[in-house]
Image (cartoon, rainbow, N blue to C red; front, side):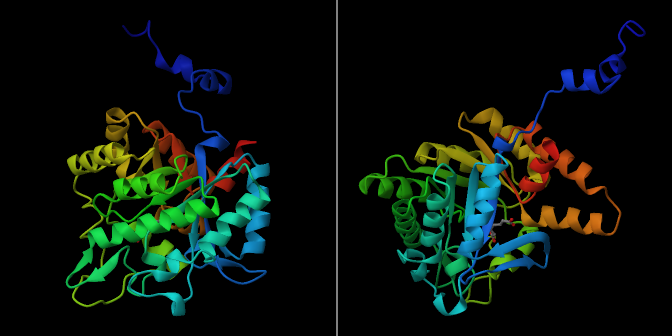
Length: 329
Ligand code: PBG
């Protein structure tokens, strides 16, 4: 057909490119992960995550107001737990006055309409850095699910809108859903980390929370017996479909960029919202390359985020949320 059809007509200038643009990012696409620590007046930069911070509850208040003012309306909370409160069973996770429970209340008191999601897994509370209870030679599945269900109820009592189990135990979505129903939290949602891979991209996050797995009994020092093998795609579909059947309101693929094929497949298969977590290592890679002057930070950031949305994400959890939204206005 050339030269009757010339695709470049649709790329001639900004106006036409905007007119035909298929994917557009908005502030409401984002969930902002936040790292909370004990103390007062603390806002400390995470060494492997430049321009990202752990903050105490008073700083969290300021942060949340700032986010809300920018149009960012959802946060995903993580806590850094002091070593002396860690044990194998994650006992501290169930403390009704624990840091997570107080963080949820702080956000809700400061900004009642902000959507609050809480991370549900044992690793920040575990003396072994595992997402579940370590037993003889394995991470105990069903015992862990029971604790996660109690933890979810505790977060719901504190005021969480959604709980976000990131642990990858089998059957935990059903166990959590049933516990929430039993306790009357019928409106508390579940965002399941349903296709979560055993990824080397989580390194900086584990620095942030001091939650890297350590030597324990006779279980491996990695999370490969519960998180998924990077090589597998059918398994991601099965995991996700099962979580939807068990009652997940939102499903998630994690990490982001290296798994966009999985995002697309899942988007095509399920009819619940699909979230993508652009993880700490993805953030750190760009920060490091930009620091060296090897990549243009803002352009690459926006390209990565748009790719995640184009692949099928309706929600993006990203450490870049604030920087990206600042560029949009
Ligand atoms: C742990 C959890 C991890 C992340 C979110 N929840 C780390 C892990 O599984 O070891 C990683 C997030 C990131 O790297 O940004 N349940």
